[in-house]
Image (cartoon, rainbow, N blue to C red; front, side):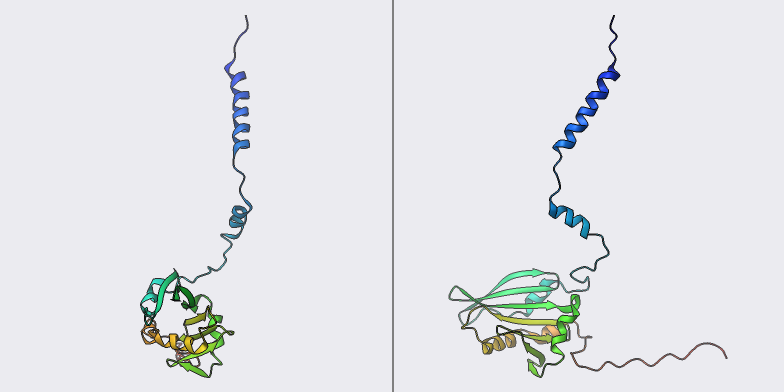
Length: 191
């Protein structure tokens, strides 16, 4: 009589099942692999945890007027952007970003000799004009159409509530303000 052994049948069946399941598993894409390799490397985050929420900036943008429509376009931590449309055509972009995540972005304002609304201003190429509020918040207007000139960009920068934005972090000093170093504390050591 032939004796039937479950063990002899179960082992090949389990091995076959394992091979089958591994063969059917989805191979990770190259993007998933790069994501795994680049996360958790003690890399500094792209946006500082101290950056303002983008929604905080919304109240400082100009409102639609005089045939121009101001439309929210993008908002994320440390940044908000609006489109300016006239007659259905995008003529400019308005943006506020918190430079706390990228302090070197504020460096270009150190040599500024121009002020708009009382804040240092710079032209960035032929199509962008920006101001720096309290050494931290960059407010920028970018031309998207040749009809939107530098004078238009300056006019739109003046429409922002720059003073309101300045009150967000009133303790920050404007660019170029000398910083006083606190005097040293006398030693408490007994002589």
